[in-house]
Image (cartoon, rainbow, N blue to C red; front, top):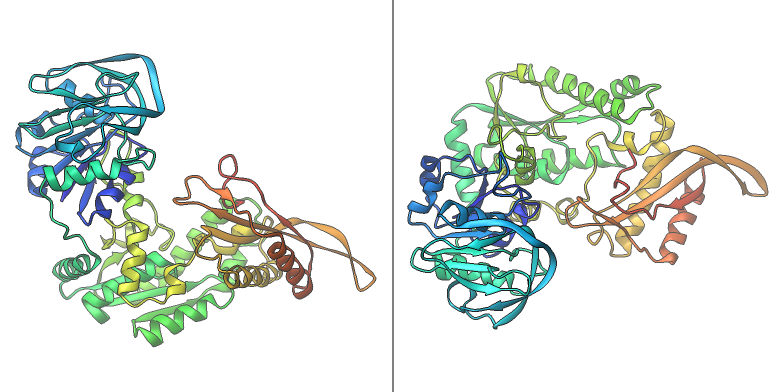
Length: 509
C-alpha cells in the first residue's frame, strides 16, 4: 500500500485515484498521523501531497520528520516537496514569479521517477514558493524556464520531489512518473482489486460484528444499496434494512426497492410508509433549509421508532465513501475522521448508542459502482444518477403539497425516459426537473390556460464540484417539452436551465 499525507491539496483525491488505477491500494491520512501509526500501516511508499500553505507560515502543515528515517521511499509533490527539502536542511523561499499552469519541463536526469520519459515534456505548475537550496545528497533532476528546481531526488535514499503535479491530466507523462514511483522505486504489487476488497471486507465485517445485529437505512441509492449487499454477504439475516418511504421519491422507486431487495436479494427489509407524516410536517414550508431539517427530523423519528422494535442491534451501517471522510476533516487540525451526516440515514442521533460500521469508507464512487456490479446489482441502479436525500421536496420551489409532488413526479418520469432512450443517461451527471413557483398563460384546445412552469436541468461533471450545463440536442428538448405539456395536466410551459456551477449550484435548492 501507499500512504498519502494530506497537506490540504485540492488534488489529494486525484492522487489516490491515480494510485488505485494502477491496482495499488492507498490511504489518505492527515499530517498529524504518528510514526507508530505509519509503521502499523506498513506502506511500501509515502506520497506527501501539495497544499495551499507556505512552508514558513505559522501553523503550516507538518508531518513527523521521523518519516525520513523509516527507510521508505518518499515522493513529495509541490508543497510536499518543499516540506521535504525544508525538513532535511534545505531552504525554500518565496518565488520572484508565481508559476501557475503549463510549463515545459527539461529533464536533467532520466533515472528513477523519470525513467523512460523524453527529455522535454509538459507539466502543470501551481506554486508561489520555490526551492533555493537543496539538502545534502539531493540533486536537480528537472527544471522549467521559471523554476530551477522543478524536480529533485536523493537516489540513495529513494526520496523524490516534484514541484509540479503529476496526478493531473495536464502533466502529459504524469501517469508514467507515478508508475515509476510505484513499481520501479517502491516495488509495489498490483493486488488491489474489487475481489480482494470483498474478501477482506467480508472477513473484517464478520470479525467486528460477531453474532450481533446491524441496521442500515436503505435509500435505494447506489451507496446504501451496495453497502446492504456487502453486509448481507458477510452476515446474512443479522442485517436488517429499514426503508422509509417519505412520499418524495421518483415514480415507482419505493416499489422497485421492495421488489429488488426483499424479493430478489432476500434481504431482511422493513418497509415503512410515512408519506402522510412527511407531507404534514412540510405543510406551508417554503424555505429550502427548513425543508431539509424537517425531512431529516421526520426521517429520524420514523427510523428510530422502527429500530427500537428490534432486539440485539449493536451496529448502525452507513454507505459512507472515502470522499465523505476526506472532506469532513479540517484542513490541518482536529480529529482524524469526523464523519459527515450521510443523507442515507439522515444523520441519526448519538442517543441511539449504536456502533458505526462503514464498510466502504475507503472506496471512491467509481469503485463502488464496480463493487455493485460484482455483487449483482442491476446496471440501472449501479449507474443511477445522484438523487438528493430530501427527494422531490427541494425540486419544488414552493411549499410541498401532494398535488405538486404528483405533477413533478410525472414530469421527472418523462424526462428520464427520454434521456435514457437517447443513450444520454450515463453521460450526464444529473438530469432532473424543477417545479417553479410561477404560472403562465397558455393556449390548449383554443382555451386559455394558466398553469405551472417546469424547468429542466441537465449537467455534465466528474465530481459535482464543478458542472457545465449539458448541450442537449434541440430536437430532444423539443420532444421532452411536448410530452410534458401534453401528458402532464397542470403544466403549460417548459424552460431549460443553461447555468453552470459555479456560479450556480446543480440543484436549485
